[in-house]
Length: 457
Image 1: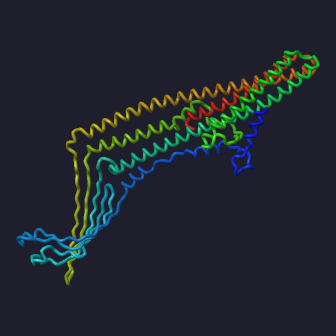
Image 2 (image 1 turned 180 degrees about the vertical axis):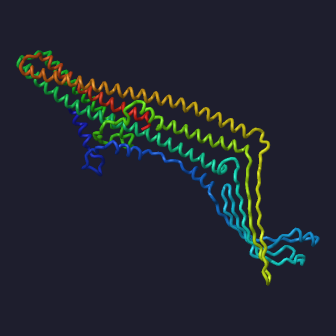
Image 3 (image 1 turned 90 degrees about the vertical axis):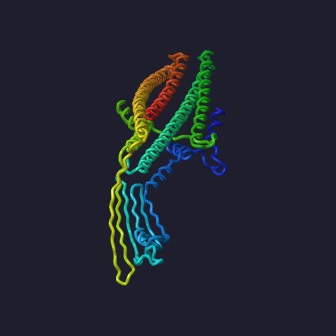
């Protein structure tokens, strides 16, 4: 009892000097999960995907400058060469496949004006041009492919993070229900100890009256001592369970707390086939394989695209206004189309296609194997849960029978029609049966947690 009282004092000891009046905390399952996740949650990696998205976005740039062109030699040839001098400015809006540019020369002085060769007046020129690639092997171009792949990579990292969190939560729940079972067992063993001590007093009293043998007394003493050992063992189990749970929460191992009562976990389906179907939809391993297949499909599309033509179109318009007393203007409109066709690449594109096809074949095999493995895991966990539930039902029946037997022997003991050893044995059997029910109930809880885990919850 001294050790039990010491444990009680530890449970009621203040959490810290600043909270001297506060008793040991009683934590719910959700509080424990939140504390553990807050202590060790992984941050999702977004930087690379954000960079790829930025590279695939439109950019806007501006420029300003001044140019000078001087012509020498034959005047006729100089006139053919053209050229101009003056300040320039422009704005360009560009994307991976599209470019729009606007340029302006407010004072355009034709080359040769300083030598008197050119008689063309100064002018202002404003122009706009557009360039658009219609197809270059991949919808949206290589930068869009980079965005698509980085998004799949990001989703894979998010899935891995979710998987890690599920694994952590599963471990926390295991530790929580283990501590809850330990607390319940400690309370039960303390009740059994009190009953065995009371029975020992009764046997001691009738032994003193010469109505019980020394064997009866020794048996009662052994039973009481065994009950005390069971209390000490349950106290140790509770302490170890508390240390494990405190470790998950990132708390000192000597932090005093208890866990609140919690309902048994619930299986969301009633048939093993439904459990398998949910697992195949939820398990992260299959999600990551699906993302890998999509990523390889991007590589395959890019590789196929290297063997296809690149088609682009261009267009432009310009306005030229002469600086004269009677201003005149000229316009120009241009348009063009260009097709670039790869002719020889030493088989590089086909090699990339073959590599992507082989990789997808590997992923397909892995996907099939993973589906079979997950199916087997779910069926095994389901059978384990069903068996644990059957054992619990049996333990409850045995406990009911032991309780009834004890009641009968107590009544007979009071009337003096049953042997002392029979009563002592019935009391031990009743205690053992109650402990078996508690243990079987804990096994059902852990079996359900295991089933939920392999189902992807």
